[in-house]
Image 1: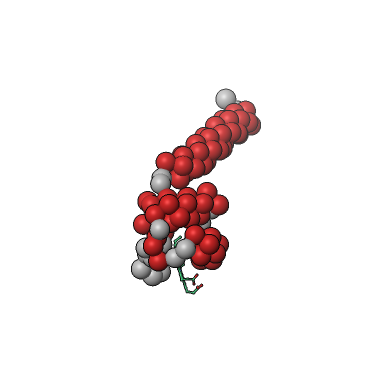
Image 2: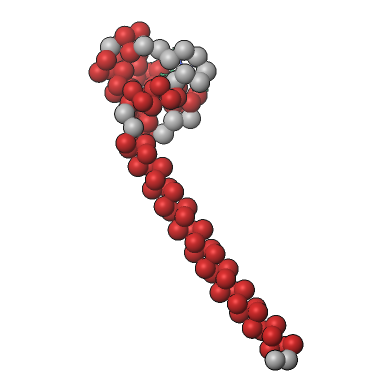
Length: 99
Ligand code: HEC
């Protein structure tokens, strides 16, 4: 094989390789995205409360506040704890059901 043909050949191989690689990375990201949302979906409000509300202060007990207060606190701590809508809803629902 002449050098030119060899170069062309390896460039083609490289292109194919990067397409395969990018497709693989893309698929991994999509699968991981689904896995994350499924992991959240599988978690209960009580679990999310235990995992998220202890980081900065003692986790408050459900009975510490009224339903209306939990709604407001949910909004505050959603921002502080960087929670998703889903997580916040679940945690607030857990507090309201247990206070
Ligand atoms: C990133 C740190 C952080 C995380 C995580 C966090 N908090 Fe807080 N929390 C604070 C700070 C700071 C305050 C006091 C100042 C304020 O009210 O914003 C506070 C205050 C509170 C109060 C007192 C009432 C109020 O609204 O000020 C409650 C109740 C509370 N947090 C509940 C929670 C719950 C429930 C979670 C989990 C969803 C949580 N916190 C997660 C930082 C955090």
